[in-house]
Image 1 (cartoon, one colour):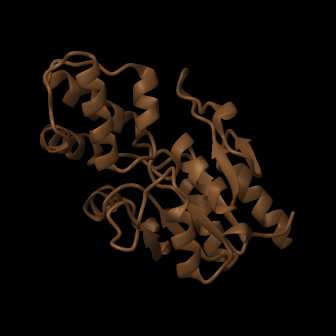
Image 2 (image 1 turned 90 degrees about the horizontal axis):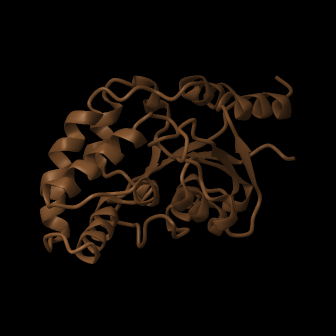
Image 3 (image 1 turned 30 degrees about the vertical axis):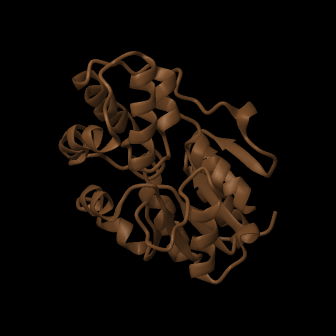
Length: 229
């Protein structure tokens, strides 16, 4: 296995432990309009841009005969809840050490997240180590045609780093994110969730090279091994 030309990191659920909080925010927003979200539905929202999540939740509410609601109305309720919940989101175990390892080994890095710029700034405020990742593709990036699960975010990140996506390692925790990275041609490392029922449906992944991991330090170990460090 060759060393990566770059490491492309997801944010939510990969570097920061925010996914359960996002799920809570969407659940409470749906309840505000008389609807409910199942664990399976919450899982389907992972890794997607907030406008795409809102459109999906609105569709589910309509199908469940809840109050008809627009994406904008949903976001008006969900965003304040999300901001409150995410203010103190902790780092995922091993995340800071992995980013530091990439910096020490001079491996280029990019953040590839569906979160918008304002949300990334808010969630990152108490995690200055994230500043080591200077190249970023965010959910509201003006150059981004489509968000995850389309390949566009990872292709754009690789282009900004000046590397071939096929030479990159992408680190993800969601089906949408892993699908996007595989579609871009990346080698994908998928972080398995500890929560029961929160795992990716691996049989839904497209063809490509991917590895399921339980801890981020497994990737760090591979990087140091390849670097002879």
